[in-house]
Image (tube, rainbow, N blue to C red; front, side, top):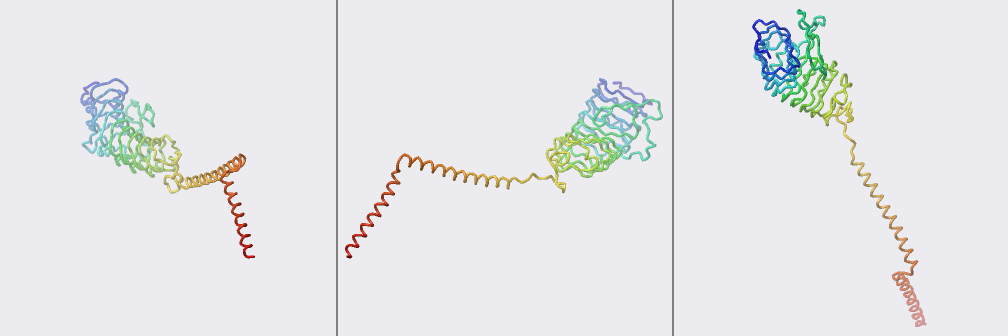
Length: 347
């Protein structure tokens, strides 16, 4: 990669996307004070985060995607650092650690959307050169031949960023896309994301997020792509507006989530609907089983008794029965004889 850029360099768009560039990102790029677009995505640049680019007053697009950048993303030094940045793509690198709050606070161009749609224009409108950059738009790699100044995107996916997602991200209200997937973010989804009213795609998948999905996110009526899969989210999925359009894939890998579009439903109070208790059912089954056993026992005993009796009498008188019956007959005869003798003596 070229290492020397002279002072007063008037390069406005520096695009080396999709090559086999190696080495460090040249520090002499700070001499290009007119630079608005820096796209060196899909190369083999091995460096730390170029915090020194904060001195470029007009930088609007910074794409470092799919390189070998590594280390912490440091807080910026000045309040005006990266204040014009509208597209930031650090995805698929080896950055780690927490997101610096002050760095995010300085992204002023992502804070307030243009109030007058007529004021929207293409970047570099005063120059004849038309920008062409590659961005990940709603999960797809798309080449933008022109970039409107109202387009804003924040992509930190496929790194090793950790800890909680800073609440300050909720201040970037002009964002069209936010992708923090495939990191190590933990904690809950910030309720402040409800302020991203222009958001069209949100991807927080494959992290370690816990807790419930904030109900306030239903207010994001511009949202058309949502991916919260493969986290540890719990509770009922918010219902209403755009949330009624998302499919199972938006939530898969969260076994303790309930509600539409999942098969596990929620009750009328927005709580996970518990499966019907099986205690009564088991009692009923045991009672029914017990009576069946008793009836079966009586039936079998009755049939068995008849069978034994039939076989016994068919083969001859049973000894115990003959003894009992003859003993009773003899006793009656003796009683009769004694009665007759007593009667004769009286006479």
